[in-house]
Image 1 (cartoon, one colour):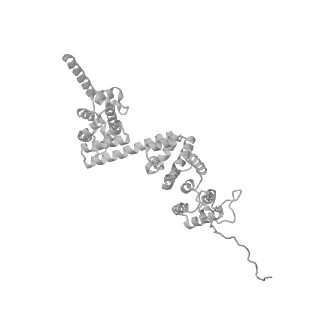
Image 2 (cartoon, rainbow, N blue to C red; image 1 turned 45 degrees about the vertical axis):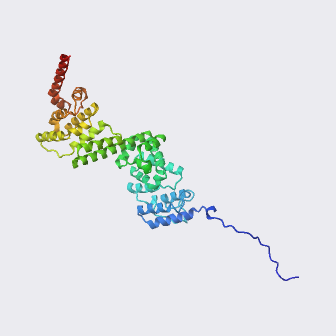
Image 3 (cartoon, rainbow, N blue to C red; image 1 turned 135 degrees about the vertical axis):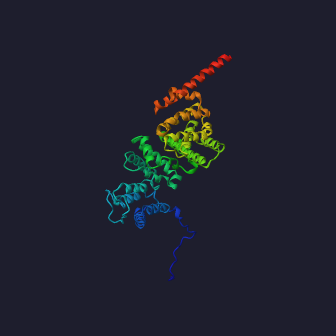
Length: 397
């Protein structure tokens, strides 16, 4: 019998290594917490540094998978044990909601970090959005927290727009669109709603369709109106700059008309902007007896510009009402009203028909008795001239 040990049979063939992407990563909230807490503690109390850390860590750590743990850490400082208490065996961060200073400014800063982290699931984001809408409607937090929605990545991935739908629905349901408008204006965000979309989709039409389809037509109408206001302000600013440079009317008029077309600005609206721009282009004399002479000289110079945007009777009437309001609001101009109207009549800016209509039933209540009295003799002259003209036509027939 041989003493040689019998060799055991072996399996031969190629051994396959498991690819890492095919391996199911173990769910380990404790390890996730350790990574987050360590980063938060190293960031200190600087909110900007914390936000930067959380943003950069999102590429390495699975926020979506550990959303509940992340929320526990940011609110309570660490992972919560059953019953809602902090687990004893975990490292805690001092950067959390429960250890923060008890003042509104600090709470608003934390709200920016808590409400808009893209690691949360869609359902979790929806709940946060609805809660934020209720808090905003009741004035518990400032609308400035919405600035977090303008994060480039959130906008690009569509998270911002989807979050805004739930938030504004909740807000309007709790209060109304007027509450939304007032709060957004207060923090200067009323003109930034288009920024909820990427640059290639940042238009009134896209915004309107998206939010109208989501059942928020009130918000769509508000945003469109704000966009129009913004366009009017920009156009008026450019017009004033052109006037201050001394650009010719041949340059100004085509430019303004093109911008009106782009921004869908009516002639009635435009003549109001032109009037305001002309009247703000000089520093007015403080003496009442000199201001009329100054106004006549200025308006004589700019009458071709005013005429360019009063091709319709409604635009003429708008201008006449703007003149009335301006002379009423600026007391030194009270006695200048009639002379201004007569000048613009002679310059073919205001027609006889519009002046008579204004005098009869289309005037404003502002300074009504004073201005009607000033215009009485001129209106009588217009009526007599009209009657003489009709009489001459009848004789000619």
